[in-house]
Image 1 (cartoon, helix red, strand yellow):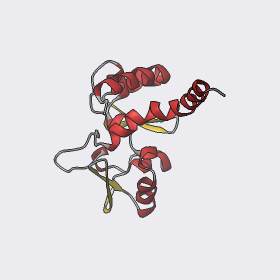
Image 2 (tube, one colour):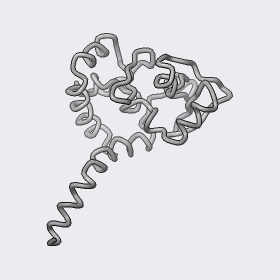
Image 3 (cartoon, one colour):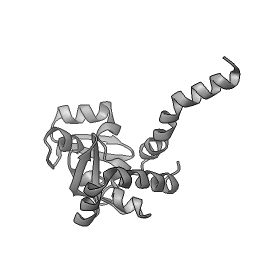
Image 4 (cartoon, one colour):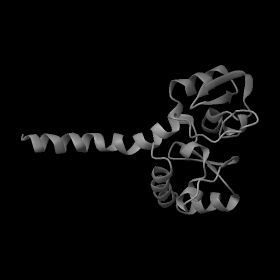
Length: 155
């Protein structure tokens, strides 16, 4: 195989990694919505509970962890440990910002009480209307939100 062929083959293999590394890198650099009074992401709710329990559960002060330059609370040790092992699985998409707002060009904070898990990813919404718009066409909203995210948070 020629060197150009090898380069193209390598590019095809790493393109998906490059596509997600921008948002993931931005999240790891602390682009999370958090309450400045408490320092907690998700208003102190357990991000793992949205997946495990399908419900909002307030985290316990005995089970905390820091990641993404903010504090996270959990209902138990197992949820905390699962988050610490792989925080990008459980952390809200777009750092807790509303995907519909992002798709429309502005990074509004999502409300942890208005949420959805779609394709194994947690999302928070600015309003009930945004939550409904997302439910109507999640794939289009997410595609537009990713483009907006990459422009607003390129690092």
